Image 1 (cartoon, rainbow, N blue to C red):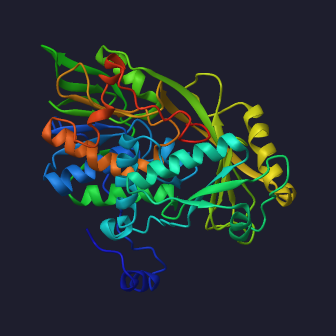
Image 2 (cartoon, one colour):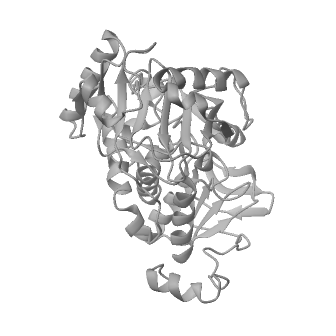
Amino acid sequence: MRGYSIFSLARNALSGHRNWPAAWRSPEPQPAYDVVIVGGGGHGLATAYYLARQFGITKVAVLEKGWLGGGNTARNTTIIRSNYLMDESAALYDHAVTLWEGLSQELNFNVMFSPRGLLHLAHHVHDLQEIGRRGHANWLNGVDAEFLEPVQVKAMVPAIELNGRYPVLGALLQRRGGIARHDAVAWGYARAADALGVDIVQNCEVTGFTIANGAVRGLETTRGAIACRRVGLVAAGHSSVLAGLAGFRLPLESTPLQALVSEPIKPVLDVVIMSNTAHVYVSQSDKGELVVGAGSDLHNSYSQRGAYSIIEHTVEPLLALFPSFSRLRLMRHWAGIVDVTQDRSPIIGKTPVDGLFINCGWGTGGFKATPGSGHLFAATLARGEPHPIVAPFGLERFVSGALIDEAAAAAVAH
């Protein structure tokens, strides 16, 4: 892999940037692989990269039915944090944050990780109790957390309205939280995985599985059959569709999750704001746009569009907290397809089919987990057994009742 540097930038500037090599290949699928990853989003690409980089498994294919990173990876609000309530969640998401902190150097690709800090607002007594409980749980798990008084919130965020419809009584701050550039994450992992020999095959939809004696033996795709004895399903909102093709069901619901951006403005918000009660979260991108989201649509759908009422529901509390934003215009909005479990925690591990592993159920929290999810799922695929950090997130918890309930603690949509 040719490294990016100030020298390569200067060298290519002389040719008007017309001679940059392709960041990754576009190969035809081979007849057989050691491991096939279904899903070319951030989690799938990260899994392939760590399989090759850390475990030496390079005969790997990533199959994407559309274009690379065209699903939820490019359709989210890029928030990164690890201040979850449950011990299992804290370990999983903080592992991801630790990887985020060195990811640009690891991939030799600027993913634009910005640890600008993240504030969870409290608007009433119950909110104060919730952030108090979660903040102390974070401390016990080694996750950074600070409690702020309203005057400290105002000092960090001068534009906020402390005494409006949603009075701000305090906040929980995670300074290591922040944002990253979603496209750059997909591109960085794709480039690095390709350099290690991974085949990234776009426009290749999986249409079925070859299963013999309860074990996977290959896949049927729109570009031909592929033999393989170990498969990782990382398809977000379409995971239940693929599980159906393999003959089992998942405890998932798929719904659209919308987000929107304003026209760009000068820097006004240098921290991520989240509010469970007001039901909105907002940050400002490096281009100056306000990136805004809230909860998922109330209906099940595989469409990457959502109901207009959700936009109204998102903008109303935003303007209550930041009245000055009322002068901004909406530039664009979009939706991803989120896969939500009963306990609002992911599913990672084995399935009823031998050799077929799954990584899904991230709901609205998938982007922040990207490097940790890929790293731990790669370890699971390489060893054939769940990595200890993800072991509690297996399908069997829905039978045993050992759920990891993050429905209230995760804030906003999940």
